[in-house]
Every structure is written in C-alpha cells, then in structure tokens.
Amino acid sequence: MAKQVVVKIDYLLEKYEIKSLRKLAEMCDIRHAALSELTNGKRKNINFGHIERIAETLGIDDISEIIDFVEVDGEKAQAD
Image (tube, rainbow, N blue to C red; front, side, top):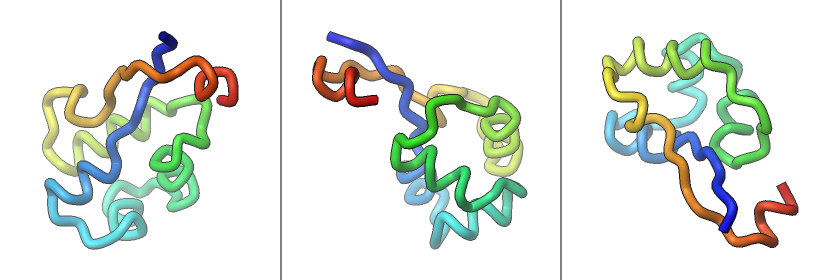
C-alpha cells in the first residue's frame, strides 16, 4: 500500500465552525484556490507557510489536527 499526505481542510471547517473555504482563506490570508487544491488533493507540494498560518489562525498546537498520513490503494497513488 502506498502512503499519501492529506490536509484535513473539511475537518477543520467543521470543527471550528467556519462557514466556507473562502472564509478560512480570508482568515488565514491564503489564496482560496490554494486551499481548494489542498482540500481536493490536487496540490502535490504543501506550503508549510500555509500550514503554519492555518495553525496560528485557529490556535492549533498539534500538526496532526491539520495533516494526516494515510494509506491509499496502488491505482490512486499512481494516478496522483
């Protein structure tokens, strides 16, 4: 099984009761398109500055609340 890093944007929106991805983007001063790509798994590289801004904005001390390392099947890993 292959492994993949996942940014848990949907989880954060729900947990911190943020109404939309656009609102989180405004709060963190991150482009909406960048957050959208992270949410949909379209972005190959993670900007750690973005992760830091999300953590600072939401008062998160544990990075595992923002990102996760999950197993994916071989076909999905090759498609990415």
